[in-house]
Image 1 (tube, helix red, strand yellow):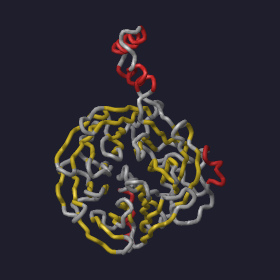
Image 2: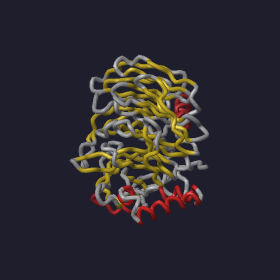
Image 3: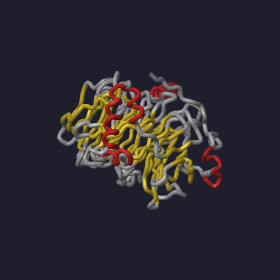
Image 4: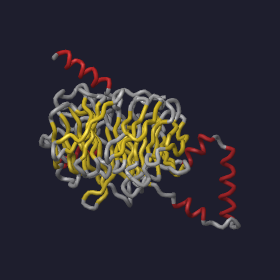
Length: 414
């Protein structure tokens, strides 16, 4: 028995940093029985899945004030749990069987099917048409209706983080994954027609995060440096937007997420700040494009643009990069987290689920932007909140709530 416990602990440590985007949240200093391994929002941000040493839980996100528990399973330790939209279908992977995927009907408490793979499962992604399983050097694409393997992408570049993302839109059903482990190439694969679509040279450094827009036509990327976020058109790889997250330091990006209308993109990292970018052309750019080239202003605009050719590319890149429209200052740093932008009670909200087992709900002013206000925080271990937004003095503080672990995760940067 001791050997079994030891092996589970060793596997836990090995998986500690292996799940990126799917949000592996193993933490050595938390209570072993309530340790959070995994937190992720479902495809339309209507629910939150939490995997831990004690099993897994599903929570409804239909209310700001209350975090309703939909389901709880405490039979085994779970480090991946993905729910298909608001259905009863969940895909789970346990620490005891890290090469085995189980697809279950959680309301009936039944197992639909299970599959075993040649290596540890690092990520699972699903939409209404496909289910994708990511291993270190291969990806398996299943038909969601009968769970048969339709295609296997073999010999992918080593992907220790299990980084991949699947569009939630079945009409633009694309899979994105790193095309290299030395530079930031994004491989786009058509998961319906089962063929490679395009390769996007997104960054000079290896990729750290990927996200599709809800309609599957845009893909957002971040590299290991974490200073620049880019958005590309999926069909031809055209760069649509470029945002600067920061210039002072390299960070480890935890997640990228679009809003449901694709107007906003949020980015979280191992720092205390979450950035929200607005995906629209600056008003100055729109005005300049309408200037008649014969006018003196149009002539001056052309002259300034031409002079940019003589400046170093790094300088002109900085001038052309957008800045954050809004931001959140979290009451912690150094912990992995996952963010999402969704509508709750017909109002736009920013949600952040973190490694110390809390869900934070912020108000996002879609017109003015600026600093977002903390509305509520919820515990993810099922216990009653001892501190919530009634004492919102923590909203702008760097001090964590009572019981929060503030140990920093050491990240490698290039």
